[in-house]
Image (cartoon, rainbow, N blue to C red):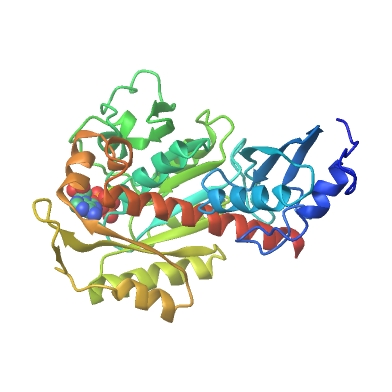
Length: 360
Ligand SMILES: Nc1ncnc2c1ncn2[C@@H]1O[C@H](COP(=O)(O)OP(=O)(O)O)[C@@H](O)[C@H]1O
Ligand SMILES: [Mg+2]
C-alpha cells in the first residue's frame, strides 16, 4: 500500500478510507460496517482503492445497495480515481447454548413447518434451499417428514437409490440433500412409530456427512408430531419458517405451529403465504382463490414478520413433480422471484437474530 496522497488534500490511507466509511451502515443491523468488521483488505495504490465487504450472508437482499453506498462514500475522498469492491460473506453460526446436540459443521438450522400437510411446506423448503445455494451459500436440505418424504421426488433423486449404502447426501442444484425417503422404496407405506421416528431423525442429523454448511434447511413433518417435537428440542434449530395458505382454517393451524415453537423457545422467522393467489399462466391475471392476505394479517397479529407470498402457479407444481425446482429452472419468473425474496428475507432475519444474540 502507498499512502502519499499527491494532491495535497490529505493522504489517501487505509485510515482515511475507513473514516470515510464510518457512517455507512448495514441496512439490517443498523450499525456501521466498519464497526461490524465488515470492511476488510483495504488497499490503496495511487488513486485506486480496493476493499472487501464481508456481509453476514451471501443472500443479503441489500448487497447492491451496500456496495453502492460504500463506493459513493469512498469516491468522495479527494484523490480517489477508482474503487474496486469485492463483495463477500461470512455466515455466522447460531448460538447452540442450551441445545442438546448441535449438528457438526452446520452453522445454522432453518426449519420449515406447517400445522397441516398440503400447504406447500416441502415446496418452500426445496426452493428456499436451492435459492440460498444459488446466492452462494453452502446449503443442505434434510427431509425429516417421515410421514411423507417428498424431497427426493421434488429434487429429482430417485427413491430407494441409497438403500444399499444407507443414508448419505446427494447433491442436487448445489444443495446437499438427504431424506428418510432415500432408504424407502417408492410407494412403500410409512409406518414408523414414536421412538423410531426420533431415532431416524437423529440419524439423519448426525450420521449423515453434511460437511460444512451455512444453512441446513429441514422439512419438518406437519403438525406437532413426535418427530417435530423431538427435532425442535434436540437439534439446534436456529429458527422456523411457518408456511400457510390464505384461508382462515390454514391460518388457525399456522398459529398453532407458531405457538409450538414459542413453547420450545425456537425463534420464528415469520410466515410465508403460499398459494396466495392464482397467477394465470396465459394472461397473468390474478385470482384470489383462497382469499388473500390472511397470513400477512395473522403474522402482524402474532407480532411476526411476513416473509412473502407465493402465487399458485402450475409451473411450481410441475417443477416439484419432475424434481426441477422453479428457482433453478426459471429464476426470473415472478413465482421464482417470490421464493428467492423469501430466501433473502429468511437469511436476513437470521443475521439479525445472531447479531442480537451476540451482543446480548
Ligand atoms: N405455489 C404453488 N403453486 C402450485 N402448486 C403448488 C404450490 N405450492 C405447492 N404446490 C403443490 O401442492 C402440492 C402440495 O405441496 P407440498 O409442498 O407437497 O406441501 P406439504 O409439504 O405442505 O404437504 C404439491 O403437489 C405441490 O407441487
Ligand atoms: Mg411435504
